[in-house]
Length: 167
Image (cartoon, rainbow, N blue to C red; front, side, top):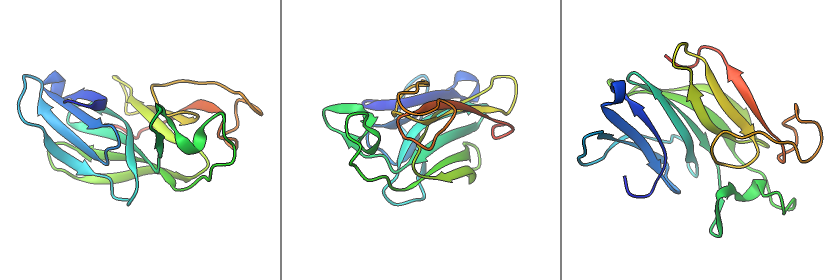
């Protein structure tokens, strides 16, 4: 898992699912070690994985057209707090993939200007908490501009509860 940036255990802890920096693929490897194998590639050209969470043999992963700055690898370039002149592009998506069948399905989508990142499936329900807006990284919330409940400005990061997206 060299270079892994996002990961989640699956199959009751027997499998590790992960992506790497600048990756458009999810990989799986036995938790005991071995050679990683691809699970799924993002279906949209120019997109990357921005977080994954698994429960059982199902994973929910975030996909976005992130462009990461080399000197700040945890920030999406066009959501940089220091540069409002950069262009927003792409569609944010949440997708669900079955590790047993390989079936991959779109479960939520929205146009820019916000990013989906760091989805987390509830351990007791099929609900998913996902960060919308802000920087690419672990779950976080903040409002540096405008109203915190709005995602119309990319400087804001709010958590959303999406019911029934996971297993």
